[in-house]
Image 1 (cartoon, rainbow, N blue to C red):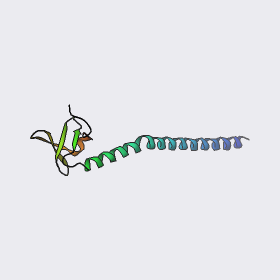
Image 2 (spheres, helix red, strand yellow):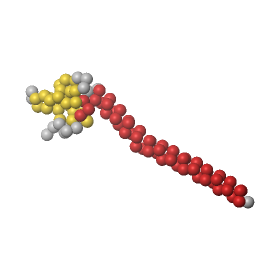
Image 3 (tube, rainbow, N blue to C red):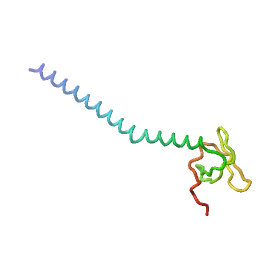
Image 4 (cartoon, rainbow, N blue to C red):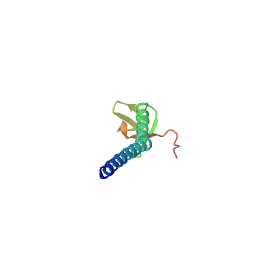
Length: 104
């Protein structure tokens, strides 16, 4: 009788461990689909946007500088911020397209 109780207890512990693994897998899956995957998608879209920049595009940098792309290089852009005023910014500092924003 004691032996049967020990076997029964061991079997129930293994089942509990299996439930724990299933719950952990579900938590990881939910985190992936609701947190990690959307972030990766957003990063990919941003990278495609930065790679598609061309001369004449209006942009906003991460620092809030509005300008027009004057020249595109591999790692950086030359951005015209005013008449005959150009600055060099890293491509990764460009965060959005400003063509739809109206100047006041």
